[in-house]
Image 1 (tube, rainbow, N blue to C red):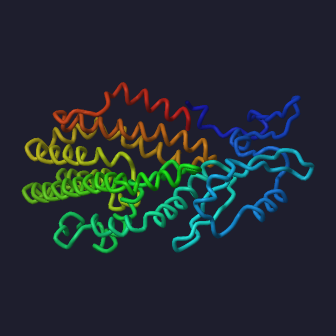
Image 2 (image 1 turned 90 degrees about the horizontal axis):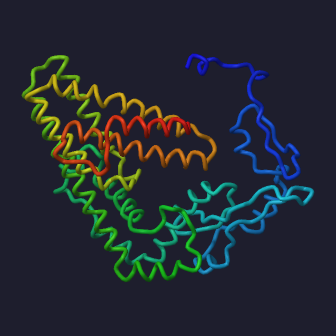
Image 3 (image 1 turned 60 degrees about the horizontal axis):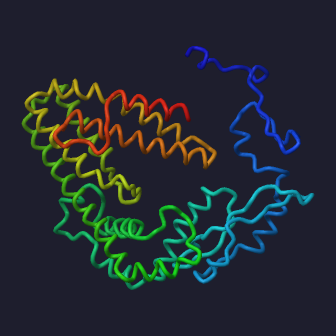
Length: 358
């Protein structure tokens, strides 16, 4: 609305209050996000410093996981509860793992993912070495990784992605008593099963990517050099990079399993557009607004400062991104079918839910 675009002066903005038990105002602000950042009580600087001196260290072993509390109370200078510190694993260099206290669950999850990765790599060092030997690209695979970097760099990123896919670290949760049991399960074959499945998926995606590149190049060579065709082929390459970015190995996503189908849909689109380029552009006009809204939503989600709020928004963003990708399949390669029901109406409904949170 027009009103939403008007910046109100502070004295006309709504005032939000955070109340303690008994109705005492402990925090007030004209901006609701200030309340979301509030930890409670007075700033626990001294308490946090003391706890970090007691708990944080540069060396932490898997045996100590079982005795680690989920959270540690923070007290202000009057001894009142001021929030909680959350123990998390921290990669400190080499294969060493230390302990760090975090002030939010999201921060703890981020540290735990990297710390757990290093801890599992140490416990499964033999399996990791074998994975580096097994799951790699060779010079004969150059057409598959052309444009993604040098072979050594690609294989280093590939090994890291294989480990992240095969090891139970994505949730960023500490395993406690279950660490040794999980290690034994991985040693017994689960590690190579997961790693192998992921590597096959990467190979499939890279092969389909190569087919798209060859198809785009072939039909671009046959098309007239006019503004309409230049626009078309620029868009095809843009879509290719959106579906499988050059850095996809370092930004692992569970949605990778859908990528080969999305690339096949793009290849079908390019082939059909050669016979009917104007029709292809009309179809693009149908889906382009959703791409724009997706990009806008991604920018807004990235700007959310409160970790837990951002995480909730990211979950909705993932759903919306999947629906936009499936909508493209339904428009350009309907015979491939979609993995979720999708339509313009469903997209608008999901979009509304997402933007209401933002």
